[in-house]
Image (cartoon, rainbow, N blue to C red; front, side, top):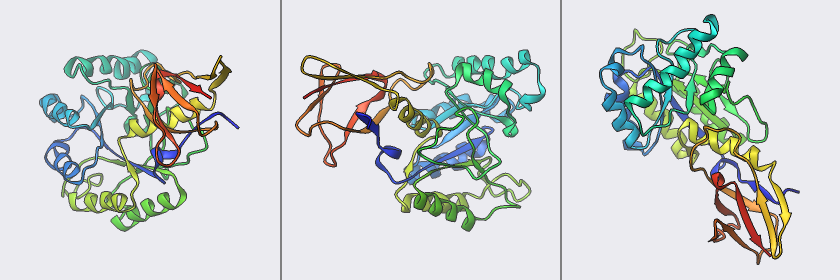
Length: 303
């Protein structure tokens, strides 16, 4: 048995992430106030293909400053598999640099593929500057114990002509019952019935409220993804005996992981042990777990 084990989904039974593509005006006028009202933090994937975004960087920055995640969605929203490597780099890597010039305090370390168009060559470029990337075309449910392709994460996409609110609410219930993570993919948030990819604000609220009522861990795509990826890194942690206990060390799985990842873990040690990170004692939680900083990449156990 490993000395250190991550607790699934930050101590919740299941998780949910709501992602929104293409940086439309409705993300500011409808999504932002709705998410704030419900106390939910979402992920917006930003593209230069959006005229509204190109003329309103500051409004998306305000959304980010409120705790919502901003991700890279390419400069012109192309099908990346159809481009040369040089063009892919311009769309992915150069556009990330551009985004960071517009919003210097944001990392832009998560990616969303346009049209969910992806392959190994595309992933090789995405992975240079992003620790996780979202695709779609599937059920969007991620299991805790199985490590997946972090640069081709599935999601459940909303489409008016194909989906219903009841269906998406049931997906949340099924995800919660299975102890999994559901990644929802959306585009516009408005009542434009001629846009097959937009969702009515009232419908989105019902779906979000279902996740709230189920007490799921609702957090941005990159937040849940970083926690999940870090959990697999902890499985590779090494424990060495010290003069008065154990020294446990692990490595971050990607250079662009968040600077801070708070993780709930269980330690397979004597209950009277003391746990330290960077010289600071970590108190045991009421359920016997510990909340550690993954990015410290080490802890000391005094037996």
